[in-house]
Amino acid sequence: MNTVGEGVIVEESRLPPGQYVPRGRPVIHYGRVPRFKQDTWDFRVFGATASGEEHRFTWPDFGGLPRTSVIADFHCVTKFSLMGNEWAGVSAQALMAAAPPADGVGHVMIWAEYGYSANIRMSDFSAPETLFATDLDEKPLSPERGFPLRIVVPHLYAWKSVKWVRAVEYLVEDRRGFWEERGYHNVADPWREQRYSYQEEPGEGPP
Ligand SMILES: Nc1nc2c(c(=O)[nH]1)N[C@H]1C(S)=C(S)[C@@H](COP(=O)(O)O)O[C@H]1N2
Ligand SMILES: [Mo]
Image 1: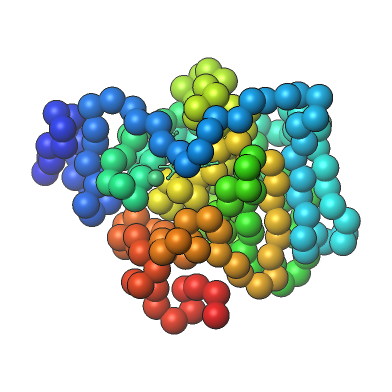
Image 2 (image 1 turned 90 degrees about the vertical axis):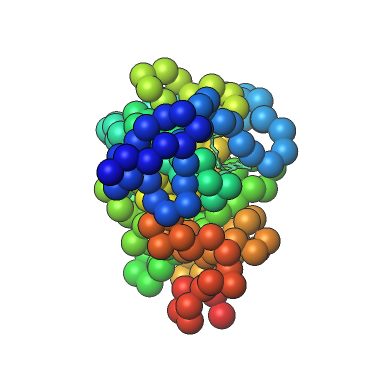
């Protein structure tokens, strides 16, 4: 079965319910595109780390982490989907090996420039396809797509794929991020159409 979006034909089995494939490749975010300053840029892993210490990576440090790539579709809650993106960078699993969480960490908060944030369950963060991407389709990310670094969690709605990432906070107790505080679903599985917080079942959000 095929379904027609705005002119692009996609196998229905690849599109979560309610999604369509737009003609172009929309860019969407709240606020301005930050400028990358390599001298002051860092990437921190803090909160409930295994060592109890914060980990800090400079841009060259981050470049020394093992790299991998993932081909995945990407679903925005406003209903467009971007199909077949090739992301390259550092898997969340590799980051966790370099900066391990303490026992009992159930969620992470991903922090970006200007305070944008998204919380993610550990089971989604540690999934093999979750990646800190530096490249899209064999080119460095463009500034508006998150240069120099974004997280990609392709199996969740794209507001969780935070652009311009600067930190990961390991959480023993879940907290809501930027959109999760503003009425969007805490888990955000597009295949279950978990768009809004009123759809949350007991246990899917912080108390
Ligand atoms: N830092 C930051 N990351 C963000 C956003 C944002 O506003 N700020 N918007 C999110 C939303 S809602 C979507 S749909 C995707 C869009 O990614 P794209 O611009 O590469 O299509 O980025 C996500 N990451
Ligand atoms: Mo979005």
